[in-house]
Image: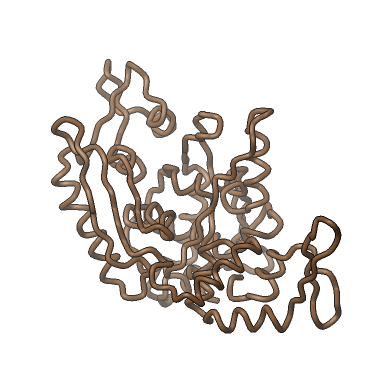
Length: 360
């Protein structure tokens, strides 16, 4: 499976975070790292990526991109790249870094070994994410899984840091085709907003920018570097929407701004609409979707498989490989491999890792 395609999965916390990347290549490096990670597998402290992994992701040639030395410099610089998000579970501001350290693999000279930071693991491994949610949820309150996003698109074709972030935000709503968001919030994620000290008139340091952009204080104010909405729409939104709609391989189709909501005379909220991924499914495909959702596969994974191998192939594999039985007074279902009658204790893991390897 090609890097950068169909295997980029991360926590929704990461979608709604701000990262102060210095350049687009640093965002691409994150995608390459994610392409090496099994979100549903056991969390790992270290991830190895090579220079050739990046070249494959970018669909380019070695002589047409950064040298290995330059590539190393970009990756190492990411240790100091800060990020922040607002945790709605316990109403707290969280600052983070994705990578803790980077070293060259002595056995593979053009390969880097990256040590993930704490939140690098929380964002990129479901088990770490669930453990974190359990840790921060107040006692007596139900656990609320904030979800994750699987991006089924070739991310190498999206150019520009802001366009990549815009696409990630929209992709969270791919099953409904509807996204409503505050203009200020969207601009924060896209990096248009700075926090200014009212007394000095100076912008805060990068670290404090990330803190107070979510928790503004009386002595600070927001500076909008694209303050006039008409310019924001003309210079960013319209070109970004056009590029998404022009990509025939992009699952997001017919994206548009469906509504601009005003508070007073100012546009404060936007509604985006596009064709949801389940919009064109047949009756048989919807029944297939319902079956595998009941087996704890994510909706986006199922839709991807329907588009990739077809619902008939999915059902054939299910019937040929899995036997279902219901036992006891409570009629608890159990699943077995047909060939050896071995019990399948984790049916969703079996589907992900064994039956539908296209998801790996």
